[in-house]
Image (cartoon, rainbow, N blue to C red; front, side):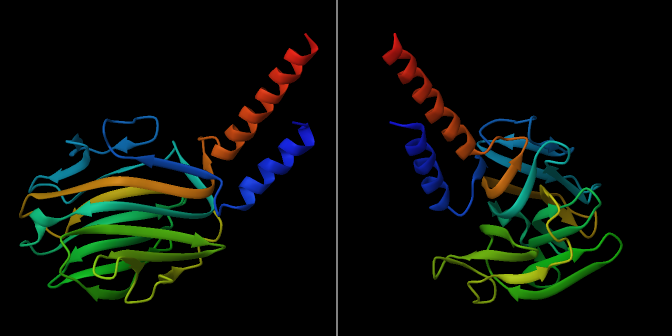
Length: 238
């Protein structure tokens, strides 16, 4: 196989996929190279567990300073909030956040009623949009960036599809963050410190144009192919 053929093959593989980098975590064990674990987080039977005592109103795990997402991306996670459903004033959420503290998030929450809700923080002020009623106590959450637009989704288990309020294109939360790299954040919070709050996350995954410091899977593929080509040439010459 000639080097030109290798390059054409590599480019065809890239063009057949929307994203060139991926990362996933099923929370089988701690991974401190990627995650910062706040107090009251732990790995429990293959899930990320967040258990807030009644004296604490917030905790989570995030990749600040360790892993960032670049360009277009999608990232998703499973959640379970079943043990919190009878209490008032809580949220289980996922965020995309910049180093200068701009945030897009989707959350499963209870504030007098059970809802999915999206929020944007511009560094000084919170804005919240379009809460959608739900009876889900477990499910999936997703954030997607296309260009400068951030969209949020939840998984509709009845129709087996990603959507937000029956819109399979998601809900546009903000374009103000632009194309800045973001880190990911999974968290649980309460409005008051009057009850113990326990939630779980699992099956975390992200696909993106770029993930740092992880090397692109396609770069690794290209590196592997070119190494094989080099070894073959060396063998033919010997």
